[in-house]
Image (cartoon, rainbow over all chains, first blue to last red; front, side, top):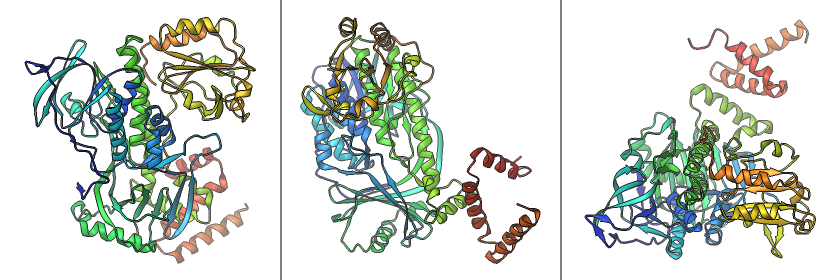
Length: 558
Length: 60
């Protein structure tokens, strides 16, 4: 159930188009990658692939961005990926950074969430934004780049696989056609057409709690940015309500409806508007507001068993549904695309064998299950799954003001990158075990400022569409054999060696953060996960670690 | 804790819950359980106590 009252900002509406040069209804040009779905997942993947010089066609059923804003909080890991996709400046310019959340029981603040933030960080822990505005920015970037072609009003109605090729049937108001692609990636959301066409089903749990979600336009001047959550507020006795400030003068409300409440009645405009009015009045806010979009939400934790089926891959909501608590939906979808883009690009260009794509499925199925596990904890606190569970939850709430010890149970466990510590792509664990600090294989890089190429920057800003090898040195000295090993590897796969001297570590925090001494060496995947590290560089093992990624043993689990 | 002290706190709780009334007794007992978890401070011991409390009451 969903109502759209207006546009969040003026959308660009695109015409339908049928490509030139059809032969018996089939597009003459064969595509390397066809992406089904032009939401945030599909567009992020297209931009990611373009970074590796891989062209893609994106088939989007609608004529513009999604009408509801949906995702509203984007975490630091996502911002790091947005930087790589070339959209960070516009996203930061138009969004609100935040790091604090407030939880209230009745009218008392009982818990304050402070998201991890320190002087090492380049990006805030989270920003508040509109999903559809980010889609708008991504689509604009795709048009500029030229490698990602978005075809609007193009619905996929059929799919068949032959050896080494996938055929898609596409329906548009301007006519129907088919196209062939080496790879297809389904990014077409929770109600994925591709998933149904292939007869695949997600498995998992559906939760009881139902939530009304409404975005309203109001003057938000002076309101704090960040998650605000009320249990049993005076405006809604017995209820649970979230309020969240968004850019463009928008407020998001999510509130739970009662177990016995009828959905149709709960979603009547007059009832929803009255709930918003009551809460604003409770906060002493007397401002005119207008509704923009509202929807009914019920949490599900579902996933496909595998995200690769022949030459068809799945990402984002088409692959998994994660309860909204902890903002792990779109954030994990963006992480999916970041994990997939380099692997698909390497497979498409023949740099790696197709087995590398199996690691995408293993790693991201693992990540989906971890995200679901964390989100479930949030869901269980927000909407306890039984009456006795609710009794315990209420006991925690009623104790929390005087006994802050219990408030850790209220932590919404916001999204961060899921460590891939069991990934088949990780190498030389015995070398990693010798470190006393720093990210072990499978983890992403902790942020830290440093000097590179004579300029102050941050470590994650040095990552690009290639493997990155960080060599920590006293003053730039290279271990024997490393230059030769790196040169030989560069002929096989894109790799950049970054030599960091003690002088580059101008804050003195980088070496200790990475447990590094002169000679220490980290090998980092194109998606920013560490795959191996050596206290003292071993050029022969570096070669073996990269070879292992390009020709992985088929992994069983992440 | 001596047997006499145990008798005292047991009786205190019984009378107090009687005053609170049947409706709010579950919530007060839940609060008490949580506060005792904090006091005990030993997850394994608490987990064993939960199992002991469930003895004879687990769904068949």
